[in-house]
Length: 126
Image (cartoon, rainbow, N blue to C red; front, side, top):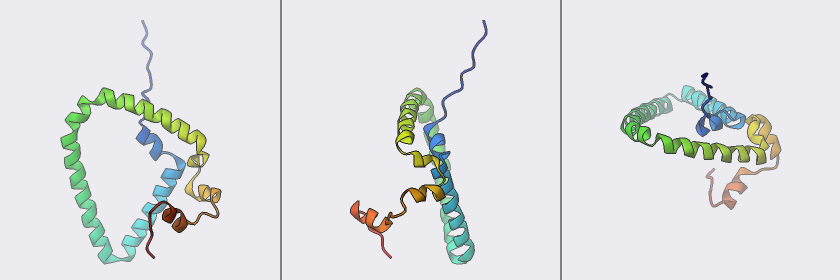
């Protein structure tokens, strides 16, 4: 009897990271971060220390969490299925998620970020 290979469903995290709006925004922010680090040597050294700290903490956290993740794998798979279904609905309702950030910004040409944030209880300082 021949077995049928079934593609495992991609993780919701992978799908979100691969959304054009998310990936293009990440690219823009990463570029700005690297440019800023290159222009300010003191800031660069502080950022590099922080980056190294995050790498170490992440490594320790992953090592510690791996046994728990392996034990909860079936529940994580079910949660992933539901999360992917939810993401499908969000993508249907928010089509700009499938556009790069340069195009998605044209969907909201009059959006004032300061006003938007203030109306939601967040405040930016100038």
